[in-house]
Image 1: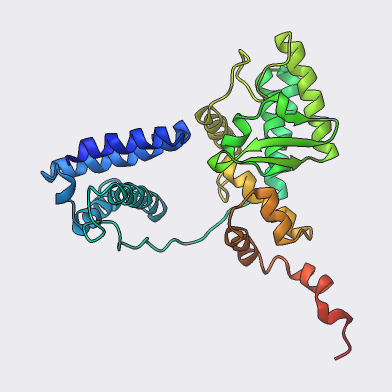
Image 2: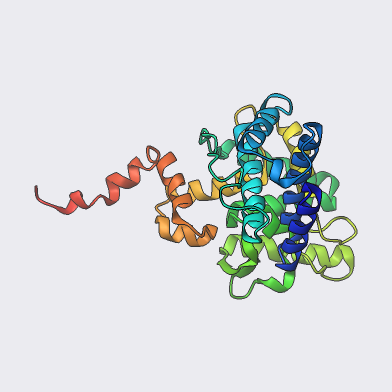
Length: 306
């Protein structure tokens, strides 16, 4: 089978399985790049793709496209899914699967979090902006930061959140995470207060409550890219030299603060909606030193005569 037809068949299969448009777009971006690379190597048929082809492609990503190890691993992950699919539908055999035995590159695990000074600087900036300009963007972006810090939700979960999924009376929100799994998350009184004020502001601004919680100036749903642009502009203003300003850094900060305040790893797993506790335990391993005070406080040896 020609590689271009195999990729199209794969896309049709993912759409049939009802994967999210964002996931399919991510798959196609990686596979189209791989197809372009193979075309330049005069490889047009699936059966001509070898393990060396995949390895050389990953080296090309490293040297020519300056992809870091995390990005290369993501691309390899897509290739593994793609060739496993071709194996399942018997276009290739297990022995012919070129990505089967290729291992992922070793990643340096570094999870950045915001310190108090970072958070105060960001919120202080938006408070001043609200008082001075009273612009919609200032109110929205301030609430967005408070919301991310208070829930630890993913970027996609935040932009897809509608007001119908926010229960301000009982203090819960419903989010649809990875694989479109629905989860209910509790929110604190502080966040309820912020959301109540923001909801009233939105109603006054638009004449009605928009469908989605975080919208553009016309009341339309924000895209992932629009939020990334918000943080890109904020990054230029804040100029933090020691921390990446992104939605995921807020998620890491949420996890860090929860652990520092004594939250157990199983509760944190449920709050972050990790399907595998191993991911949650990575946070615990990284911040083990920071948890020393909690260990001193709760260690079982404290109550034993030894």
